[in-house]
Image (cartoon, rainbow, N blue to C red; front, top):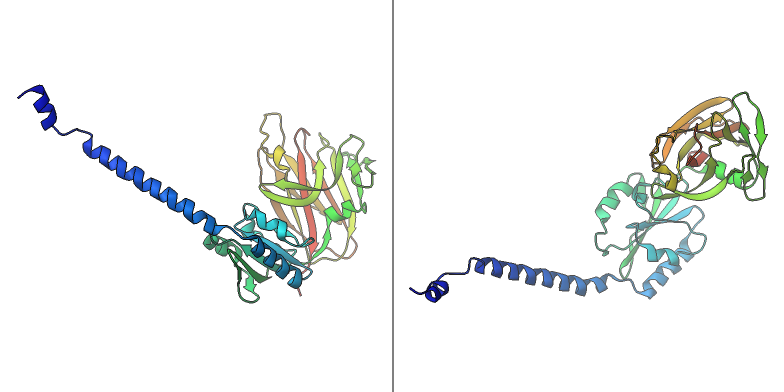
Length: 314
């Protein structure tokens, strides 16, 4: 048998593999084509966004909030009526939204990887629907009563933002150096600013008191008088661009909540990007509240502090 005859009689060792690869490529191509044909059917028409906006405008009440599902339903945000808060960030499904009595869930169920089953598991506890779901094309809208609602009686960020506090640097011997109210924030003798600002901590935005540690044993303190509240909370975390600092010279930060001389503390570890929370005491009428920040090395110790008093919903 000649070489040519042997060659023609022997099957190619890759013949079967080649056909398998070809079939796989065709299948992948068809799947991609199908996805491309399906994707436009998930888009939301302008008229549907506008219908949602009209519904919210007509039926909104004070104490309402809009929650996006999934959280990246960003285009819907611009159609929500002005003055109606919108929440949507990684992890917002489980946000207690304690400030709000009613929650409008605005969803795009047909978005790829919408994961609304997981959303329901995180969102549903202590929430009850107020009426049926309404559909506007590829959008859905449903109103819920928020069983986790805790009406806010005092918010430290608002108090500072209105200039209704004392802010100062305090040394261990009790000496105080007052910070000056500029009309928008408090400028301290070391040149650092304290005041109400919006910042992000671990994906979530917060309206909070921005504190910058003075360094050493000195701490920056905000002091004010609070109305009666059935409970209080303190949450704090490094403003996100500072949270990941792990240099060996960086030191932890201590945030203190003091009510009528009784203090509780939160320790914020180095390299920690989370928001930490502690439950404070009830606040008697006229309670003197102090919140403070200190860290041995002030480098990158810029903290977002949320302190509120609240009562049970009626």
